[in-house]
Image (cartoon, rainbow, N blue to C red; front, side, top):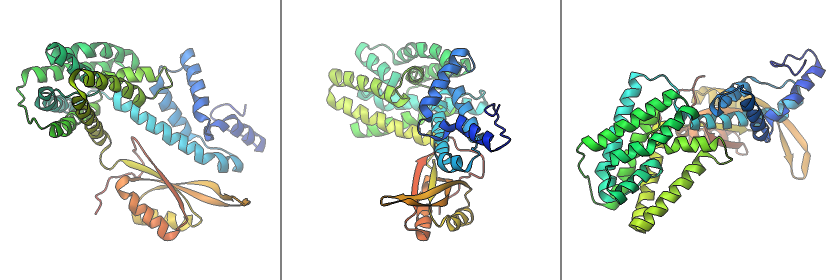
Length: 383
């Protein structure tokens, strides 16, 4: 059959049938169709969970190509955008699920992360009645209200999520997360951290910075210091809410309680702490040179392609499309090479200057790329 995978059409009719069968891959309705298929595969046991499904979909979209000229023109660009979206989602999932074998480098990252996080808690946040989001924030709240040891509260509060991690992610992830939480508890209990400052602004900024640095390092080791991320991942797989929305809702509740119990000022400074920590985690995970995918549509694509490759040293991917279809001139269009390239965000301004110097009317848009690897991607010093 023409629709059997992998598709191998023998004639024009076969090409049309193959493209019709997988038409949805190149449409904006891809997500809804894919979700229905995911639920079906999950119910019959073809996949074990969301991460496995996302990885399979990325491989499939990456390898799939349309056969007819019409499908190539109308569907290829959107198919690639769907692929980029999936790769971004995979980056978010892996940031909290880490699936690597436990290595010595992971142990060093884990140890460094918990020591730094302990320093943030005992050197900045706890002495000044500041809070963070997630289970760390809940543990700090319980500690301030009850006076029980913070190390014990952190361990007890996160145990249910460690157990949940066995089923949601893997036993290896759960084991590493348990080790991380136990080590954090030991650090906060046994290491005599000194209070750094009483200045609320400095506490909010630098307490958040060091906490984010510690959390980011443990994420690089493939575990979660805060069990709330496991809960968010579990809920995300069973609802229409995103991981970020779930964590945000939980944190709103935490800061609301902090405002009622310790005053609005303490809650507001704690929100600044959380914001600083979140941004620091992003930089630790993604790096200052986070990759950016750039799509360029121009009538002078031949010149632009050559200069991107030879002057920027970047690889490019070309999609066949059509440009035109303007108001009042809808019937006028022409074929065009749509250029896609991956650069660091530090190079984005240089790329735009290069493009607009060639074609001031070029259409350029960019989006963040997660977990980019392979090809001729490389990090370079920007002079």
